[in-house]
Figure 1: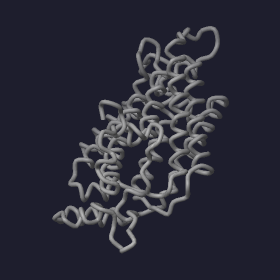
Figure 2 (figure 1 turned 180 degrees about the vertical axis):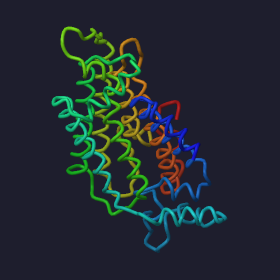
Figure 3 (figure 1 turned 90 degrees about the horizontal axis):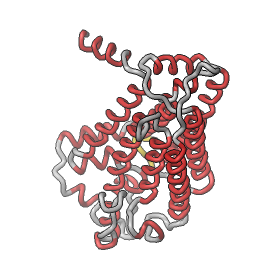
Length: 326
């Protein structure tokens, strides 16, 4: 009980920004820990959609694609594997529930905008809690811009799920869905919380917080390019025949260029939201860290799956997600 009390005291002493940072770091560490488990159990924990063993297509003679189920059967499955298998078999939900992430993202963008305009209780509480540590603050213009960009990203992803992407009957473990919902809920606060001093203060007595124009303009340009390129990637993927290998555009060089764009989006937001005197926004860069690790693990699994299904020569020489590095 004493240990629990110490943990509670530690968390309550943190600022809202630090709580968000802790969530991202712990989530990223969890993803890395999962990536370190044996391959058979890892597939059950992190793969979903076309890459999951449940959804791997069968050939005409009833055999599954080369290396997918057969590879799992060759592994000595112990008690740990069967425990993970039992856990992941519970709470399976449609992969189409990904749309909830973008509905939540847009809803939070609207909610915090209303809270800001009306000086809502929740908004004021978080801002006061953040101000108690007096960190460097974003300028109000930065807060509005990053807010708008996050809303723009959520709106486009929602449009893609409603109009662009093909419907899928694949399923995923509910933990993926819960983690995604928690991420978007936390990010809706992260994008403005380090600007608490600007958003709460009004009038001539407020400090003049500088607006880093060149940095913001550059980051905004990168965001727009990544935003457009990700849409093009998703548009291209939606037009492919199911379970076929993408090979046009950025897919000639990267296995998952849409993941590359996602990382660039959050990295540009971190620079765009950098408080005065800082290179980047610490809270949003932690979100970028989580996104990069989470998608990096998925990109690694995707390259392996492509190699099993189409032959390793088809993906040889392609980077998974980050040119030159990964």
